[in-house]
Amino acid sequence: MRTRNSIKNSLIGILGQLFNIGINFISRTLFIQILGANYLGINGLFTNVLSMLSLAELGIGSAITYHMYKPLANDDREKIKSLMYLYAKSYKIIGLIVGIIGISILPFLDLIINDAPNVDNLSIIYVLFLLNSVISYFFAYKTSITIADQKNYIVTIKQQKYLFFQTIVQIGFLALAKNYIFYLIIQITFTFLLNLSISKRADVLYPFLKEKNIEHLTNDEKGMLFKHVAAMMSHRVGGVVVSGTDNILISSFVGVYWVGIYSNYTMIIGMLNKFIEQIFTAITASVGNLNVKESSEKSYDIYKKIFFINFWIYGFCSICLFILINPFIKLWIGSEYMMSIKIIVIILLNFYITGMRKTTITYNTTLGLFWNDRYKPWIEAIINLVASITLISKLGIVGVFLGTFTSTVTTSLWVEPYILFKHGFNKKLRNYFSKYILYAFVTIIAAFITNEATSLCRYSNIYLDFVIKLLICITIPNIVFLLFFIKSYEFGYIKELILEFIRKK
Image 1 (cartoon, rainbow, N blue to C red):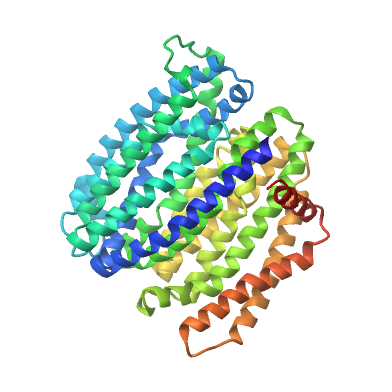
Image 2 (cartoon, rainbow, N blue to C red):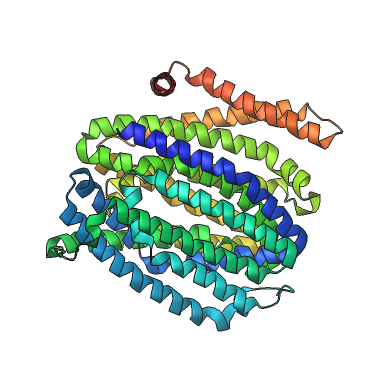
């Protein structure tokens, strides 16, 4: 059942992302042509500012979701009702706090925008971004129970459907009115409709949530919950500072124009991450269910298989991005929007290292181990800010990404697996790093061979050149991975899983 739910959630998520990637590129192309890089920069900057405000969430959602795995597995409706009551109450308060803090930032917008662009109504644009963010807090608890109950496909289908229609309407208004304010109002409208739709679906799936007789959590249960909330708050801080301050630093030290240039790369990588995230989001609830019902040895066995898939996905994607991202930018919107190769290398190094953490983070979260490394995010955040600010003044925009790399390598790269292997599996950390180093080594070999092969293929027709490079990127890394791991236990499991799924279909 767990495997079937994971596959179902993953496939629907992946198909949904594929469906929307094309329409998103059309939307972004029209956005650039009509509004230009400065509006892209504002878009990226305000998105980062709002991600900083999400710290007010304090990790409550993740902590309560973790506590729901067991009652959902045991169909303990009274416990689910108690947790959801607390969840709903907390998020309504958080939504109000985010709104108040967000409004209070308005007078200080000039301080975070260096070289202010020629963009009208900046304050109104910011308030619309804030409103779009605040709306979700009032519905988030209904989304979370659906995902925690291994029904992520329901949320995904609705998200993709509403995003598709939102993008179509935005494209139409952008082409006709050429007005960014209308563009944002449409986004807010569809955000509200999406959340309302998910909420109504959750009411159908879990009608007992409407019951008024709710048992309050015991003091011990509240104590454990608040302990986990405190730990998740630390992780929220670290995550937001490391990933959510890049555009703010670039805007403050280099200029908002470069935020716009960088945003095209983050959009492509972000789409790819969302595509991959469907897989890990789909398996999270199943892993939570696994950890509740099975032994640590069984859990460790599944971990190794997921980690192998994790490597194959991020190794392959990193190689493809390294070879193809600049040629794609050139084909798509022109060479004037390209960034230098040294910046690309650091961005993709961060992409690979962060991506390789996915399996470990999934297990740490579902096992409730976020308390054990609660200090790590604070140290990571301090290192990131100090390194980024120091390096950006010396190296420019590349310094921001080197700061992220430095903070990740000195903290998360080894702390997260250490916590999991010590407290979750009771295994030696060398079991993890022996695999990690092997996977990194194979990725580097595959990248080198692929790069050499593509450098030999140069065609005057830039479209033909891109297609040939794409075919090489699809072929060579997978062949190299296959040659190295065709006899491995993990590959054998994946092969049998795929064959079994095909046979059933």
